[in-house]
Figure 1 (cartoon, one colour):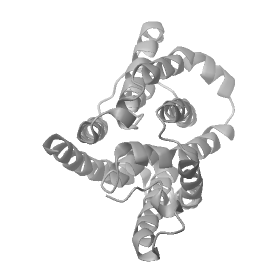
Figure 2 (cartoon, rainbow, N blue to C red):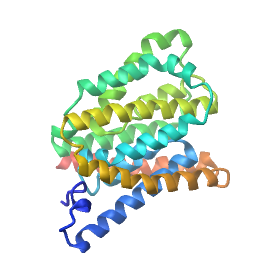
Figure 3 (cartoon, rainbow, N blue to C red):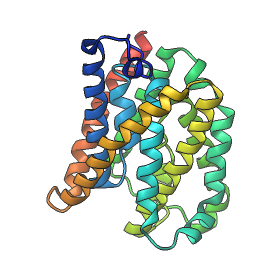
Figure 4 (cartoon, rainbow, N blue to C red):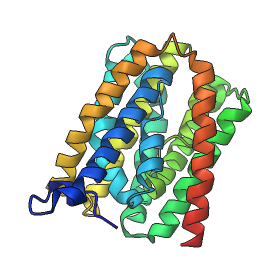
Length: 263
């Protein structure tokens, strides 16, 4: 298996060994950015899912850091009401940080097969819940105890798989936020999860200088895809597009879980 962090950045390696990998990484981030531009999420799930077919989940997560940081700042910065939303979600976001800290090292030092299987199961859960279109609702009086529990659970899943959508996304969708608030809340949750994951990866030695450089380069196709997705949002019928995206993610999750459990 080619090291995706070192390979593209090692000048002595032959071109024929690195070009296919660079092209794959660029395509995956372009696709993931496009999906995020259309439906407001999907960057970590797509990049982790697809890149884990060619590299370890820890290496895929290292490439994800800069694109996830920048695209989520983009997603939340242009909308008003950020401070009030941060106050409302503070205990959940704090729980995410605690969960990632508790699970630190799972992604970088655990068996690669277990990380791949965990990633597949997380994708299965996320896609399955999305396709079921269940309408959850959490009353405001329950947020006080539910928010930190959801945050810790999300942090643990993030630490184990590099994906930070379960159970944060279903929880945020159940709060009764309007469309713009939900998009901002998702971006804020993903941003905090990315920062916590980056700190965990750095502590585990999975973010050397070459990883930061590769992640920075991956930002370009991610931003291009996100911009294109935002322009195409109205033409593509986001609800139908999201169902197709979730169906593809479900298939990918089945394969990754099967491959990881058989490793």
